Amino acid sequence: MIGSRRSVELRAREQSVGLQAVAVLLRYPDADLLASLDLVSEAAATLPPAVADPLTRLCNHLQATALEDLQAHYVDTFDLRRRCCLYLTYFSHGDTRKRGMALLRFSHTYRAAGVEFLGGDLPDHVAVVCEFAATVDPVQGMRLLTEHRAGLEVLRTALVDVGSPYSWVVDALCALLPAASARDLDKARELARSGPPEEEVGLEPYGPPETTGVRR
Image 1: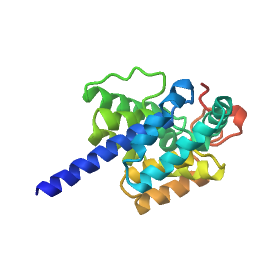
Image 2: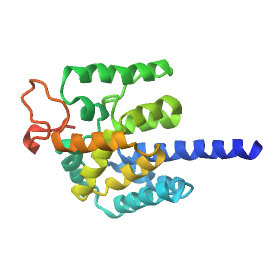
Image 3: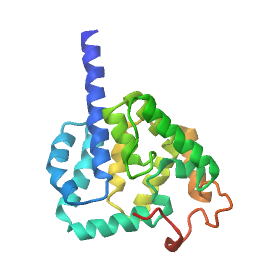
Image 4: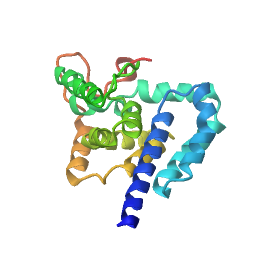
């Protein structure tokens, strides 16, 4: 029993460290992020290979690339490509009225855990949810991530398709979650084909860059 308990505690620690690393690496790259990469790399080295390897690859890429190039790639990838959206409820609800209620659910979950969401991002931003799961409430944070596994699979595939190094950090995140179910994968394939639900907002689900994205 003692060995079993220590194993569970180790997995919990690995999950927390991994999610915190994902949260850091999915932020807009700036000088503070670059200054933290050595620490993130050291933390990643303590994790299982399925999580550590992709995190380390991204850290190495970020360290070897000029900041202005990183920033341009981040904006081009996440702000201008709808399939690469970092907001979880977009995949399931698109730009519909239902998305507002889904966002409230995230905010209510944070509040129930004793924290107020005051960030500049929406509460369903992948980095925000990962930080919440890592540092506040792992059970509820993992539930939110797992419930949106299909969207994460769409995001991962889209990043691979455009050749973005950020596919590695989503690989690491998915390795921290329960394996995707057949239903999740079917839903991801359907979302990739048709895009999220639409409402009368005047946008195609995955329109051209000039019509897309929440601008920074």
